[in-house]
Image (cartoon, rainbow, N blue to C red):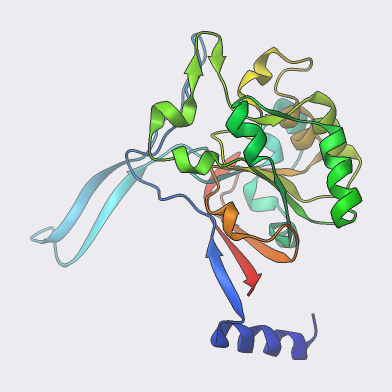
Length: 259
């Protein structure tokens, strides 16, 4: 980007020609957290302990100690989150250029309304490219399903039925395609995890975690306001903590959207 382009972006932000859209769900003690069945260990959500509150412990300031899992709320999955990526990057080692890139929105809201466990396919991805052009290098591919509307209702958001969670996501071959066929930075969803709810029963299990993170790409979950993005043409900025050894991090995710 040239100096002129940077100046133009600054001017467009000031004039409102470019809008900043927050794609981050609010993070609180009530934020829904993934629930794994026994015997697997589960992550804590967010809890906080008061250090001082404008009192004798600190008369002019307030602050808290936080306890939070790396994979809570809107968060990034680093390659080392999954065993296939165990030799890859931790959060602190992710190249900054991978955290900024074009946003590509694949809208499957209607399909998910009729089938909450909708599986994204290679045919879907190829049809998208036939209509909107090839997914660009370093893009963030974002699956819009309308699931963000459930984010304040844990039961509806996790949507666990008799046979486990029922949430949308890519099937095995779409996961493989995303990991190998396009040099994307990552894949983002509105749901609690990047894989579909039924993905524990796929071959391989949790294929997007397995293949995408194993290929050194990134995951992004619990996104908000994807309906405010154009299908193409927006720029996404993902801001995780620069956490040494981190397998993931709660993140603020912003998009620059031309009006």
